[in-house]
Length: 411
Ligand code: FAD
Image (cartoon, rainbow, N blue to C red; front, side, top):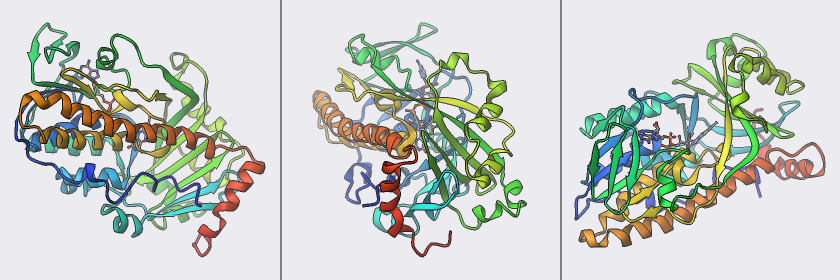
């Protein structure tokens, strides 16, 4: 089968989790920590369900760093369910295909057809978008729903039994439930795990993220073919890959450049990032290296996977998003899983008839989501091997399995 077809597994058309935001019979007072992509989507899902939600975010100004993000169909479907479609539409690009290419020549070795297949099968399109646009779409929706958000509100401690949080300024808030979407460095996770820190898995990769003005690509006769139709292209080679697509409604050419890196991020020098990035891909397809040559600024991210946890809930405290299931970005599903978490939590809570049933409801949420997100964490790790074979028998076998899939395609 198509072993490079990374987008399709786990996206079942009958995935009911992301199919409805039901009205809660028992509206709760919910304190939600973290206004990242996961926290915002969860706040919207819970508020739509009829709960009173207050969001606490440590940064004084809302925003997202980085460049592009893929919004796979399972995520788009969930976001549409939350009413995000009109907020997203002005900013998204819908790639027609995901094309895997040989690192040295750019030759097509594998292909996944997204248009119209994904909309037909999964009832929602596969999008790419600038992170900042996705984040601001969620913020706008939050504002339109009049969900209360407190900025510059850093949560210092949690009391899971009381359902309370205490901020850096000493103020304590008490709710029926505390939801922590506080990211990979989560403080809440430590509380849930009884004071222990999760074991991180650093498989030894880092990624540069960069954008180039799309006109610079279009104006080069050797490069312009890549813009002939909206597409996701991934060059794969020994321990490295480069993923490209356009964002900003087609105005920016986005790249994620993944490569081996075992060094300590605190030693990284941002002033050297552009040169270091270029050095990583010397000898790769001349088309790709020409585009990389256009990059004027970039930043490097360490790629970290969390372990698959066996606990997301402690009394009235629940973690979700990267706090619960950080993963390598090799399935493009980290934020997608966080969005699904939000809908799943809203759905579980909508089933309770009294506050006494809260624990049972959280336990169902935990079981269902731990399994699905755990599979995605493992699949992302698997892709770090599958995509990164050095030239040789494994790579040849992998590429040979792709050949029937690419016949008849224009390039
Ligand atoms: P975060 O975005 O980390 O948000 C946590 C928030 O909590 C922050 O705003 C933080 O300030 C706040 N916070 C933390 N502690 C406190 C505190 N004590 N008090 C108050 N506030 C606090 N995912 C995809 O779905 N598709 C992709 O294509 C994709 N590509 C990726 C590419 C790369 C290179 C990387 C690194 C990741 C990628 N991901 C992708 C993963 C995705 O970015 C993350 O899974 C997602 O952003 C996690 O969202 P979150 O809300 O759980 O956490």
